[in-house]
Length: 516
Image (cartoon, rainbow, N blue to C red; front, side):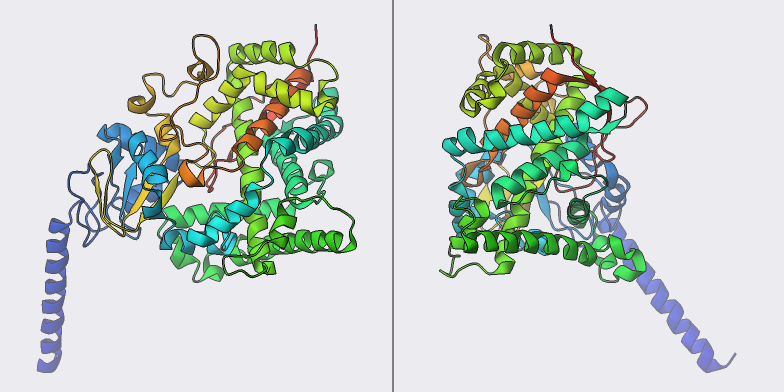
């Protein structure tokens, strides 16, 4: 070996030792958190690994991320915590009802959809109502609000729900009850809510309840929601998506599935535009109102803006109600006591022929306190949006004393909140509808900070009454006709998504109910 080679070797050894020393020193300083991350004063935190924080644990628990969140709050005993993770933005997590109400209502203007939310969701939701802030959000909400009124609920929406449920019964459930075949209850609920909302919102009859096999739009739409959820919680996803051909099959790429949902949305828009131009209909549905509206710049909406409208409202109109119905029937299948009480109330108010009188049916549904309680309890334990976040524009102090620095992401987790004893008492994890009734059996509501199932404040869900009506008409009509039994030896759990679907659906047997 020459002197020159020896010198190079020594230099490399010295450099290696220096790098090793730096890593060691950094590991000692950042022994429980990501590199350069500083803990937020006075907030309990979850200790992680040197330099990467809780990244390995988060990835390990990605498939059970909601129950992992439940465990984090139980582990600390706190309602506000931090979870330092390399690759994810700095954020404060809370399930304190006071803080949630403060974020969503009291200091609403300070908390917006931040840069991460837009980056993660833009290809799916664009500038639609769920992704928008400020004036862009305000005009969309104002335009949409015109269809959410009592007259529409009573005179039009109720009829559509009943019609679609009759299709479901005649073409799917009666057959399954006769031949003993197994149904995927969640898939049927998805088809029911998709058909109902696409007709009510966009004037298009899909008739997915009448079709065999998978619905291509629904498959791609669900895939994109899973991918968006993975972007939020898995820091490696952004690197994989830069080189999709190395990590994903074509049909498992965002770009492939975006084309599918874009094609669907464009077909809906073109069909509605043709109907309006030809004078075939004078009905003012959601899409026609947006076609007539002006955006925040005073301009008519282009096809991209209309596309964003269609896809944003399908999440609201299809996914959330279908999932809530699936979890509701799952829970009452486990507790016959609750199902019996529901049947007693249904038999009291649902007389023969009522389904043909939309006004009377609407009134009867509103009278059913116990059914409302079961629905609310379902949303407490299985919230349609189990996790959410905002971005602080300015420094703030929460009701629990937490200081929030401008530029910090804040997250709340209704799933973990609903299961937390410090919020809901010792029976927090029990499905117990009676918690929603007073001593006279009348329905009572909780503060939106404690039960943010329909959000709160200025962005409270426009369709909460629509979703409740649709769900309870469905529950009443199905339970009156059928009994449902879970197929044994199946694991019912949630999937990765922006919303709260069952991972593998829910297989059930159907029998016609014997009326006395």
